[in-house]
Amino acid sequence: MTAPRRTAEDRLPGDPDRQTLITRLVRVDHAGEYGAARIYRGQLDVLGDKHPLSKTIRHMERQEKRHLETFDDLIRKRRVRPTALAPLWHVAGYVLGAATALMGEKAAMACTAAVEEAIDEHYARQIAALGEDEAELSATIADCRRDEIAHRDTAIAHGAEDAPGYRAMSTAIKAGCRAAIWLSERL
Image (tube, rainbow, N blue to C red):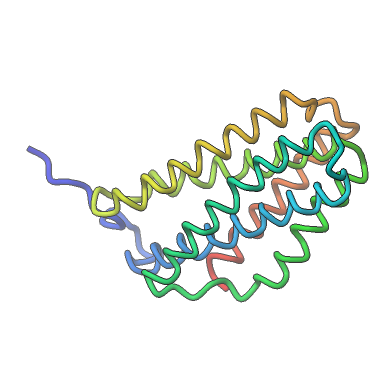
């Protein structure tokens, strides 16, 4: 019988130890959920309550806020310092959501699709990195990931790929997300 795999037991030289890995993971996920909620707030403020997509975006925003509450709890329970970049993500998330909404509903949905695709990949890597000793945290991330995948699929169903410049916009937004992830893990 094989012993259960433990978090960070297969790390290589230079990889973070178990505690650093968990700290980074909780910090970055907290920051990401905060940024996502701000993106949806920016989109809603531009599109307004009467826009046909408002109900859909509000639903996604509520889910992101629920995820944020979950990571707020984990920040406290695990005594993890939130990212020092939260003020930047407060502004950047809102501006990204508002700017893409100003470009039109398809651009707003392109933003959502790109962000959620990057987060899906990020969460998948985190789940793979966690061992059986972190089954509860892994399940929490998997639950959030399911919502993020649904958000991406919703955005695509609402014409994200039909946005002018979709490929370039998607590539740029995903690159920004990857940079934000790297920075938020560490700062």
